[in-house]
Length: 368
Image (tube, rainbow, N blue to C red; front, top):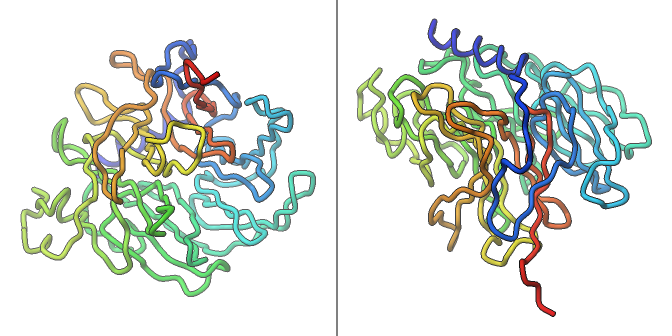
């Protein structure tokens, strides 16, 4: 517990006082034919993003305690302005639009505001799910499934322990008004990112593995989240491998292994299936994942966006898609979330630089 407290303190310092490093887009690398540009800057610590019903990109800013709207009315690939749409929030992370409301995951609760466009003031704040636990992994992700239900991810209080509060290390399910809440899935140490498969409607989620088992254990994970399933933490990781703290294979027998194992300590956060038409056809349906980056590793890893190629609903392999934020042992940027725009471009938030990037594709030799 003491080690986890030290880790949390260090991460809080990094979030509140990010290192100022000269950064240039020329240092970022994307595949041939792709281009990465700044869509908006000076955002504090932008975390998760969502498009409003009228097509405007919104983002939470954790450190500044607000939600910003980033219209691009002239469609030049850069936000026209930064509109402070909601202020006075407590460490907001998750954001979603549903049925005329904008939902926000604060550290301690889930709230919503009536949404009538960026030229109207948001409605009065409604607290839907109060008194959520805040120690340890404090961010709350909120997402709506194809079933119209609200799903909330709550991380663990520790590195590895048996939680007293059963809402921790779990994904919760609610009605849109916050009522009839229950545990949907458990054994998920810190599933910050949630995405919905465009064909099956299944929930896919990232999960951050525990620390202090060396540079390459345990793997971080991508899981297909199903009702009532247990994904192992704290008793096991990966494909039902017992955690050395408990060393009891029986505790892992009925747990669900990940659909994809990732490099340990990558810290996968936001993820999105590519549903646009701007990128080459081979990208259609692939999963793009933002790696926030390691702290508990002798050689840093992560700090990039990866592409998980999909075929028949199954991951086929992982490859780098956008890199360059990590140079040697220093990182000047930390990707958090990825979201596909209505025009097929990809937006990437970076809570270290305070920037949202936009990635587009233009063939080198377009047909005449």
